[in-house]
Structure formats: C-alpha cells, structure tokens
Length: 396
Image 1 (cartoon, helix red, strand yellow):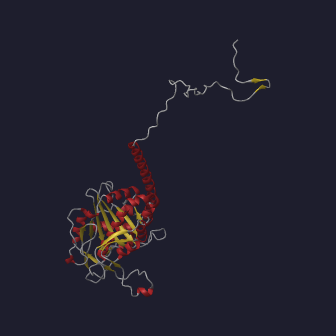
Image 2: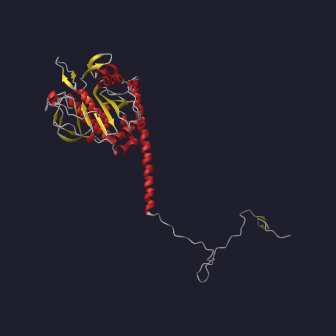
C-alpha cells in the first residue's frame, strides 16, 4: 500500500494543531550573476498604466456636471412645489368657488395664449385674515408664446363698471364684495377676455421677495416727488417732510423702495401723473421681478428658498404650470412687451370714479393682437387708455 502523507504532523508528544503545510512554489532567488532565476517565458510582464486622455476627462467632467444640474433642479423643484402647494391652499381658503369661475384653457401655458388676473392687496394672506379683501391694484397678464410677447393690462381701481348682481360701482369693490371669484366674473364681463388663472399678491410679503432676490432695477421715466404718505420719520419731522423722491433714470431698489414706487398716485412735479400712471409703475415692478426670478441666480438658490418665492401669492397655478410660465417669460424679451391701460374720463358729478371710454375696446384688441398698439391720446385727458411697447416705460 502506498504511503500517504497525513494532513498533520506527528511528533513524540502527539499531534500538533496548526496550519497544514502546503507545497508552494519557491520564490526565485537571484543567481550569482544578479539575474532572476525565473523562466523569462513564464514571467509576468507589467504593462505601463495608461493615463486618461483629455477627451475622456472632459467627457466625465461634463457628465458629472449634468448629473449635478439634474439633482439640483429636482431638489429645487421639490422645494418650489411645496411652496406652490401652500399657495393653492391659501386660495382655496380665500375663495373656494373661484375655480368654477375661471375659463378653461385648451392646451398648455407653454404653447397657448394664457390670461392671468393679478390682484394686489396690502393685507396678509395668512390663516387669520384670508377673508380680509382689498384690491389695491388690478392687472391682467396675457402671454402669447407663439409671438414671444407678454401683454400687461392695468385696470384703474376707480373705474366704474357693472358688478354682476350688484350694479355699477368701482371695479375694486368686486374684490371687497365677493373676493377673487366675483373679481374674475366682473373683469371677464367688462373686458370680454377669458381669465384662465388668478393670483392674489400680498404686497407686504412681495417686498420681502424683492429683498430675497437681491432687489430690482427700475428705469424711472421722470423725476418724482410724491405726496406725503407712509412717512418713515418721527411725527415732528413728518410735519415738514415733502414726500418720497425718485430721480430720473435707472436705479436699484430694495423691496421697501420698490413698494413705495409702485404705490405713488400723485407726483408734485407733474400733475398728469395720476392713479393711471401708477399702474404703469406697477407693471415696471412686476416685469423687473419676473426677469429676476427667471435668472440663473434664482436657479442656484432654488433648493434653499424655492418655497419662499411664492409665499406672497394665493393662486390656482400648479408647480408645473409655474415652470411653463417661467419658460414663456424667459423667451419673451422686455423690448417686445406690451404695456396697456384702460381708462376714461373723470366723473362730472364730482366723484372719484373714472367713467369708461369707448377707446377701451381698442385697447383690449391691442392686448389680444387684433390691432396695432396705440399710445394714450393725451387730448382725451389724464385718464386716456392706450398701449406702448418696450420695457422701460412710457416717454413723458
């Protein structure tokens, strides 16, 4: 019988625990001549490590940047969607029936004309005061993606119109009587324009938004000295304070300054500057904020403050509809924007009402693109309706 080597060693003292010795190839020992004793044919050849080419490095870097942008965009959208959800709930509490008054839109905002009603208020849009309505500004924003054009239509709050179910009154009383739902019905009835969406803007929080985006730049068309209101000084100094001053030309404004600029109703340096021209200043502020919101700087901050961007709003727009609206705004240059206003004449009986004129029909046609823009006819008075094209405001 052949002798088989056992997997353990046997000594005089018995078996010894431990690893079983295995036969391993002996390490090659250099010979006397200094050469390796291994067979050159069986020796493993080490190849030099190849470095990445510049093309490969650039491709990997671009891929990483794309992944980072996608992750950043998703995080920003989720943050923004959270804020939009809160804005939708604010509108539901404020006007539960407003959805039934809005005109259905056939198609997406991205590809079809859309009309959005902007209602400005100085009251808080919180849980305690959601029913305290007071519209200080009324504006329609109409988008036209096919022509890459935006049209802003300011409606004076003192314009006398027929309030459905309540008779003739100032148009801003519709908001006070029946909230956004009645305001939508009144404006659709008076203008003939279908209102697809609505935004209620709280100006108190809107100025905070302007500060969060780093302020805005406004091109003031003429020097302004307002009548005294909201005096920021002591009671003693306010007795001699003349009012807010704005120089002519481009200037950077924080939220407080921009809010004051948009609220000026009278200019001591120009009697023609009235509540009608106040609507033009509000359009400037809205347009400047829109331009800042669709900028790259806002995208970088979106994951951190996305929800705060819509904190001043109560709206029916969804997060995806906001994204579409932002793209339409981005592709619509300010030089092509249409700034319009409705108007009329002062009331001969002495009230502060503005009596609508027939020229308002032409202005609405200009907003929809059915007619060429025509500037206000100054011969018709301070409240004459009309349109102008551009981003800097009318020429005084």
